[in-house]
Length: 137
Image (tube, rainbow, N blue to C red; front, side, top):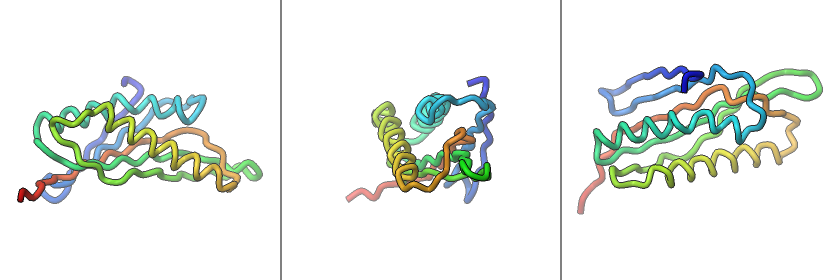
């Protein structure tokens, strides 16, 4: 994790906390291998919050840098998951695998549209942690 920089923003009395994990790596051979750089940080964030809270929601967004093949123009596109409930007892590996699958499916769908954008690197991952109190019935 030494090639990563993490920033934290808090909002609404800590009901929403945004972690931005920036990669200082510029060489990522494939999108799949590039994603692997970030998973230890995502896991650490989930582990820390599950120790402090019984329940919370989180959402993950990967920002990728893409380049147009024809003119070399670069643009950043985000690939986002839905908010996911995490309980203290949740299997974090399963949650992370579900997020990984969703991000890769979104990326493959984007590439499959024939837009002409070519992946260059994952710039950062944002993890939003949202305070969540389930209603008991």
